[in-house]
Every structure is written in C-alpha cells, then in structure tokens.
Length: 144
Length: 144
DNA sequence: TTAATTCCTATTGACTAGATAGAGATTTAG
DNA sequence: CTAAATCTCTATCTAGTCAATAGGAATTAA
Image (cartoon, rainbow over all chains, first blue to last red; front, side, top):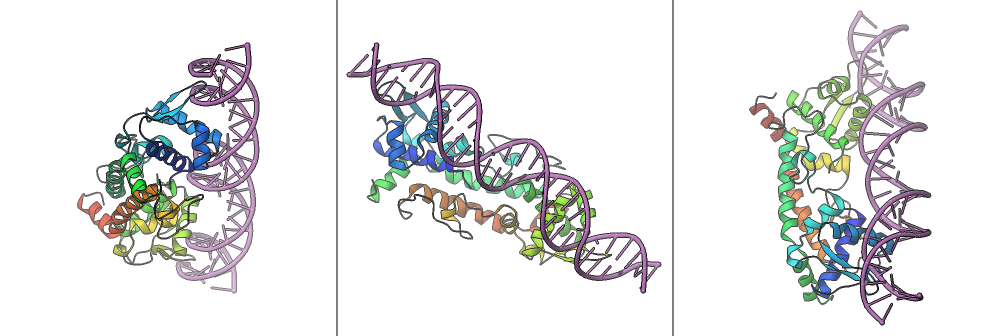
C-alpha cells in the first residue's frame, strides 16, 4: 500500500499539472482545493523540491510549480520520493539495492526471482504513467 | 516492501515444498534450517494454517505440512496472508476494496487508473508463481 | 517596514513490526 | 497410564514509522 503522503503528493502534483506547467500556486490554495492538511503538505512539497520534482519561490507572492515538464514526471518518480523503492524486497531494488539478511545464494533464490519479476512489472507501469497523461485524462473526462 | 514475516513464511513454505508435498516437518527443524526465530515462526505457521495454506498435527510427533498441492499455493496467496492486499491502494484492491478518503470521483481519478494497472501487473506475476515452480527451480539449480 | 510566504527543526500520538515468554491443549512413545 | 514432546493461544515489550502539528527563521513583494 502507498502512504497517505504519496496520495497527497500525487494529488498536489496533479493539481499543478492541470493548472499548466509554468504556473505557480501557493501551498494554502493546493491544501484547500485538495483537502490536504496544510503543514503536512508543506513538508511533502519540500521533499519533492529537494529532488527537483517541483520548484519554489519564497516570499510575499511565492508558490510552487512543477520542476520539469509534466510528461517527464512519472508516478514512479513521485512514489520513490515519498515511499522509497518500488521493489518488494531490497534485493530486487534497482534504486536501492541491498542484500537480504541470511540470503543463502541470491542467484538461486526462488523468492527473489518472483519478486524481481513483480518489480519489473510494476516499474514498467509506473514509469510509463506521468503527470501529463494523467492530467490529460482528467481534462478529457470533464473533471477539470 | 514485503515484511520480514512474509519472507519467513515464503522460506518456510518453500522448505516444505522441497521436502515433498505429503511430508510433515516440525517447527524447530524449519526454524533451525532456515534461521527463523522459533517463536515467531510458530505464529506465522499458525496464521498460514487458519487460511488452509498449511496443515498441522499436534502432539508428540506433530508437525506441519502443506495444506494443498504446492502448485496451488501461489506467492500471492502467501503475501495476502502475511502482508494484506497486493494493491497499492484500497480503492484498487480486489480482495479488500475500500474507497479512499476524500475521493472526488473514483471513475475519473487518474491516480486510481495508474494504481489499478500496477495492481493487475503484479497480481498477474505473483499469482502465476507458486511453490511447485519455485521448488523445481531450486532443485534444478542444485540448491536442494 | 510590514505582511505574506516558503523553509526548517522538533515534537506528539497512534499504530505496527518483529520478537519473546509462558502456560494450555493434544498426541504418542514407552 | 504416564511422561515427554509438540502445537496452540494470549499477552507483552521495544523500537520504529506514519500522520499530523507547532513555532519560529529566512525571504521577498508591496
């Protein structure tokens, strides 16, 4: 299961994507519109900023905007920031590989083989879906 | 990420599958061979028993054996017992559906669409892999 | 200078994961 | 029949994580 943080992050980013790539929006507006606890959203956006997914400007008329074109921000990118690796086990993670404790022989581990296939399948999906396609879906269904 | 419990469960079940479908093995032997904390394994096997994945007989020469043919116990079956639904969100779970808090319109939610595709992809993999195929892999690679 | 905003650090409460302890119930070997 | 070996059950503990909140520091526009 993804975390609440991940859900909030995706909703906030989708909000920005629908508004248009260049436009800047303030935390409080996103929080209100998407019904996200304001302070929590602050922390989330800050994290997203560190990885370049969003950009910010501070001060009186500050706000947040997408850090790069919406089509270059995949669901996988976002989930990796909020929830860590997609993989079901560190031993099959591409971004954060680590050997399992007590692993007898990784090359032979039948569990690993299955989890690796699962990782590849989810990664394939989540890397192909991005904020641009998602925003387009929303517009098409008239939920703008 | 899957839990440690899931890893232990899979290893224990694989141990039983390699031993052969009908054979019964005692907790302490599995615990030793697979380096799993004994008391923890007890609790895990008990849970697996409640869902019919393993069978037990008590008393002096008791032990555990698989509850049905190894080919009918998928990785998905096991993970659902130890870690709950495979889905990344309750709103895309087949086994444990629940609407998200504050969901505007499920039919339109772009996040849901992506998570649904991800769920289907992992479920497809994890339901096709079972203890029989995994045990066969192990034997083939000489790690019996 | 002041008001509005993002940035940062710390803290809280609830819950879960992982593990352990100690009886209770059941079966079988002898 | 008895004793020992095993599974069954309930309770507990510790450490860590998730979700959320608080309060002020830094920055910028008017």
